[in-house]
Length: 453
Ligand SMILES: [Zn+2]
Image (cartoon, rainbow, N blue to C red; front, side, top):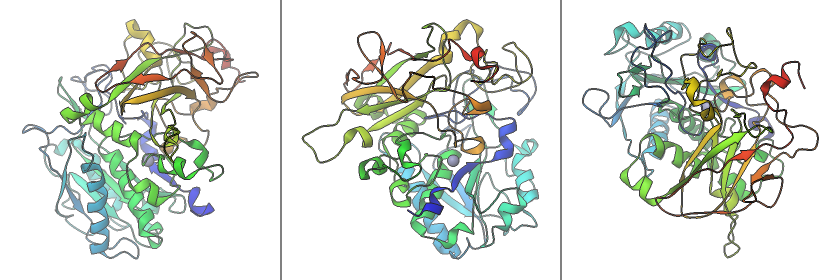
């Protein structure tokens, strides 16, 4: 796709990032320790380490998940055209056979969202005192899809730059009942200025934003496609819908192996765990002891020379180490106010007795085959609302040191290598655990970077 478009970002709500930390492959939000009060400052019934998702039962949100669309047009797209794209975008997630989630349009919003009423509509969505039920004001609904106009005026009213942000989504009013951490509301704003362009790209933006609405974080796989250089057709085919930047609408409209794994992990069909396998392990700093949070682990199927495709680029699933753990657990680079585990972050598992979990990764949804395991840093451009994983690239988080390599592999010799990974055979229903990678050429822990690299 075009150079300009490659720079456009698929964002989450940036202002939410002040209080909310991103997670990856899979859950966008993870429960923290129970705390008194209500969201966002507390959550007495939180399930620590449990992902937030929609719960399909009579006491939560029975599926199909209903949604409501804006009354106006989406840029140059008519309402009917926009509604059809929305339906197809939800359908892309619903069609994943190893996941159980479904959607249906309940109707239109209670009014046309415009620049003049966008802030009250957004405030109503975040006003959790009206739960359960509709947001106050009569326009917003529990799952609200907002169409912006051709000038991006709603984006501007909500503090977003319509020249760089294609859309954003969030799930206000996170709730817990001791058994589940669950969503009660979701919404997406679709940039109407962008909607003047190819509806295929618009389709990809919608699928991506709705992925956030059902609890998916961003994923980094085949990052060489980010700037369009060295991106093979197979790498493009394997690019996740949840990649933070729109690279190719046609490729990203259809969920990739990584998206399928992420959604199925949150909403598993019984076939998921019997038809696929998983690989788990830990990422450790060079001292071999200190768990390393925030590194991107990519499990790739070994290329089969008998086919015309490069499976290693197409069949790949990622996960960020420490994805279930609170972002500021013992990491001075991301600690906000205090040097203890009791920090302001209400999200993420936060048990000092489980320090090792800070470096844990868990890659599900692997079709049977042989796989390699690699670890890499997150791309520096994936920041704020385009972040990946629990800590992202926060505060200049560093990875490379002199003598290390950009991609490090697991090897059965017991050491991590820059080349010559050892394949792991994955069978249906299997879990291969203990795949631990000790990073090469890093300081022993984050503390070493306190004064910068
Ligand atoms: Zn996004």
